[in-house]
Length: 206
Image 1: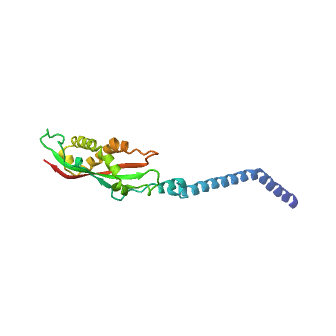
Image 2 (image 1 turned 90 degrees about the vertical axis):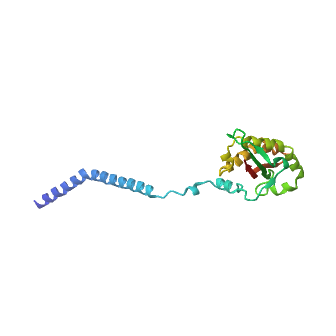
């Protein structure tokens, strides 16, 4: 009798293991997979992103380091009798008021065959008599463009804190209409001359 009971107990346990064993294994495997997925995504979200600077290609960094730094040296100041005591009637005054002023052009020069900073040859302009003579031939055109711009400005624009905007406009206009055409770099003449700043002096508004 005892042997039979033992056999029945052994047979019942074995049948339970055979019946539920695979199911238990599947559940355990599913839990392992789920735990792996959770851990993977949790760690991924917590990983700090690499700084953007480290992601920049070396070539871009090299290009930036090779750019010309902003010029800090003084330009060469060009002036002539033609650009002295210029008169013009400001806008909105019905020719009842006038402005008188003198202008100096702060010039910079670059040798396009060279690389920065060796390309800056501004210091040589004072000794370049032929170049200054060449500019002098266009003094009347330069004066005409200056007067044209000034006549479109009001007294407040010429006698206030925003006069720098007038100077900037003159610089852009004179570079575009005169100096970019007069000193266009070529294989025969690599010299580029342009206006760095426009200076008003002796300005009188009546």
